[in-house]
Length: 350
Image 1 (tube, rainbow, N blue to C red):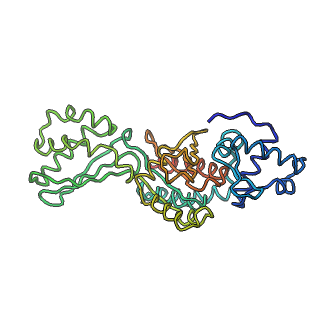
Image 2: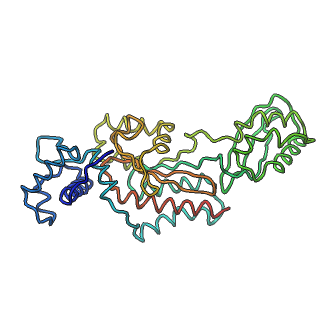
Image 3: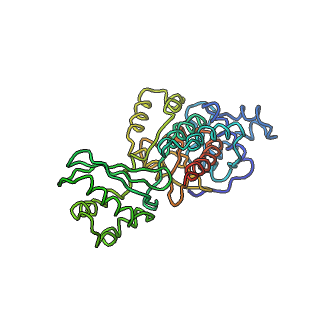
């Protein structure tokens, strides 16, 4: 989005309107700014500045009152050119560390436990709808595989992947196999595939398993199923959500139809995951997508703030979804710190 470079007065007034609107959820008037902020400007001068900002689309007048609210363009200018990044206070840092770090310390948790803990803490601290996407697995290192016979023609395959990540798939067999046959194939797979990425396995499994002396029928089934076994999990299965109670309590969603639209969107896990994964312009690893910048129509009244976290070669994402009238500085502080904390927690078990 192209902007004219606003002068100091315009920046000050736009910043104040956004900050006041975040707190009050009410349109902001020139008299309010003159009385509550020491800008050294008269009420009339502030009105003129607001008129200029409105003419260029940074603020709008929702009703006939003198108050103004920010537009998508106003929020975008603020986020890109006015907002400053600061650190979390010590109390919030401690809260994140205590809740996210405790699972990996006792080593009893899985990745799902850690991510579920993380999304709950993120929702509680941000007071917004919060999501975590588990990492994409193509670049993850395969550690080992096990197979559990559920019946003579049904088998569960368990893949242990880098860090705490596990992938489980139930396969229907068109042949009967014994435990001894399964053990032989498992040993061969682990010897030949351990240490490779899932993407490498998908590309080269036929070559890597050629010439082995194990049961050829079961081995051939594994080769044919490699695209499923060693592929990404569906995006909706990678999604963790918390904090619905916070977003529905916002003034923007008090109307029943607005709540229905919001809940419908939240229940569509595929769309929710795509919203976070595909959110827009980024600044310092933080991505902020405002209003109509979002790819889903239901999210046009929302802002999505997201950040990546890293586990070895894997990349996941955290996100905060809320009304465009959110505390952007606080959302960015929380996400930055949470991403670093989650990366460290998951990586520490390697």
